[in-house]
Image 1: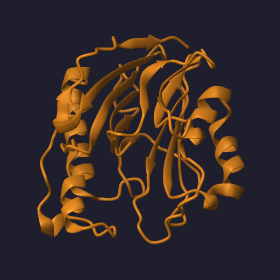
Image 2: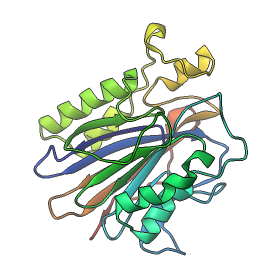
Image 3: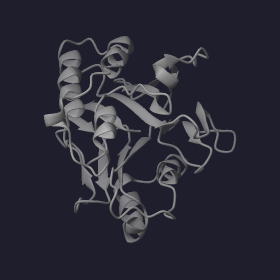
Length: 256
């Protein structure tokens, strides 16, 4: 998952409005969002290589999402997969602060990650880079990509502005949010971050919606928590060059 934009307690009808794109190599085996057979209270996609997930929710109203922290130097080739950090939270539904504190002792064994944990009443954030500690988020608008929360990359800044406009105008319907996610504009070179990858890759990755043959935006997800604390979850998937996948999964309302 490479771009997550969310508004917390900014809309009276939808206390949580979240829109996210997952960018990944198309060759990586993946299952789309579904109720897990081995954990039937979990609704999430599944990474068939690492065994975890990048984003999901459960029937208790808990949700979680993860992005990688982009880094070239210090990358650990044999590090454990980061996806189980999301899956374990959704399976066991612990209190977010205690869960984050429980993973701190081994956090350095993972490659860089950002982790968002939500309940019907609060959102917590942690990154295992840049000295970030577990923190409960205040009401507001947030953006997360492949650095720490609210790093001012162009797609994060423009995405937050777009989300704020949608929510402020009380137009946070899924179609508007998906349209906002599907912005494939490449940032100007002078605005690109320097994360250690080539200039060609920095350009490609600067788009909110990445279009490419080998690597791109594979899934867009919208999650809204309504005033009854139900999660309304919708996913749209894509194949190389940004073409929509023909198989449609109907939106789900997850009762709590």
